Length: 127
Image (cartoon, rainbow, N blue to C red; front, side, top):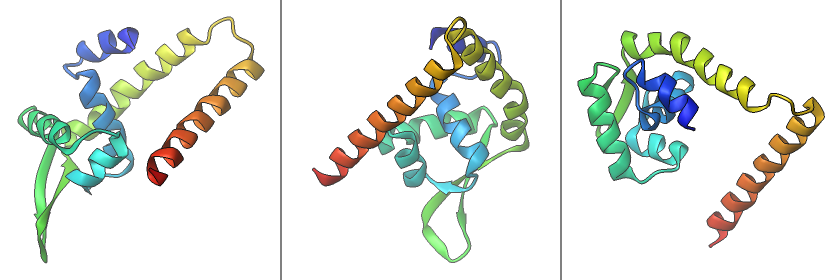
């Protein structure tokens, strides 16, 4: 994680903001609750991050017409533009991290980790 953190900081983005940006690059316009759920963090954490990212000019929060209850989070052009800069950095770190490991072992490891995550999510949902 530190390898990615160092690369992100060079672009003024914290690791915590990286998580939210990754989600918004795929699902722009989520509510703060949806963003919290997808990031796997509590809503106050999301609120703090979103507020900071808004002050940095990376996102805008707004209500949609006909729904004054929910606040949706949208990327600004600056936030969208970061995708082309930051994703290659994460890909670089991923490449470095698997150096010397056979492709079949990487595939097995990823499948195992995904299964672990699914098992924990299922256990949490049934609790």
